[in-house]
Image 1 (tube, rainbow, N blue to C red):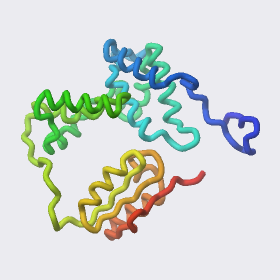
Image 2 (spheres, helix red, strand yellow; image 1 turned 90 degrees about the vertical axis):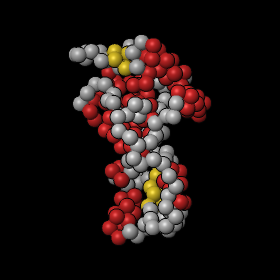
Image 3 (spheres, rainbow, N blue to C red; image 1 turned 180 degrees about the horizontal axis):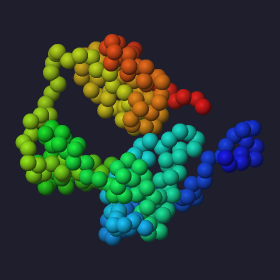
Image 4 (cartoon, rainbow, N blue to C red; image 1 turned 90 degrees about the horizontal axis):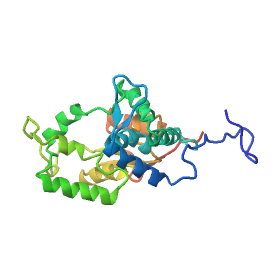
Length: 245
């Protein structure tokens, strides 16, 4: 445990130092990604050899950006800063260590299993011009992470199975009420579906994150369990707040 800073309340802990504190993180990040797309950054000490392109780095970083961990430490942001610093110095092992925890591999995997469902839903690009338009749009709206969602439809180009569930308007009737749950990151997507299905409701988690049911917030868990067991929905405008620790 780190010593509290002068003037801190008794028992207070100082957040661990950030490896990029005081630096222009955006500039460091963009330079790293651009350089890695030209010459992938090797994972030191890895056999067989592995290396990270700029795309790999963005994919590996995305979960930590979305779910930084509990305040005020934000441990996954701290780990990400250290990984960025090490990669900028020529060693991508910080990213590989994180990926290995989930996949047992040092390299970002190809999510072929997801393509087996996505491609049948028809998200593939119509042609090269549509791909270029989407790429330009991503670079304009989210330049630091542009491209990380393009691989879903791009991987469906030439997929051997035909589209069986193409996008279409929701049925006008016959759907059960829907429960949507989302954080600051993705609430709007859930709320959009709720607005289209009569009788539905959405719960907003007042915090960061994505996989909320498994994140341990008792408020979210209770609303989801109640819906799954009895189809009981919360009142419109319900929110779940972060637990105070």
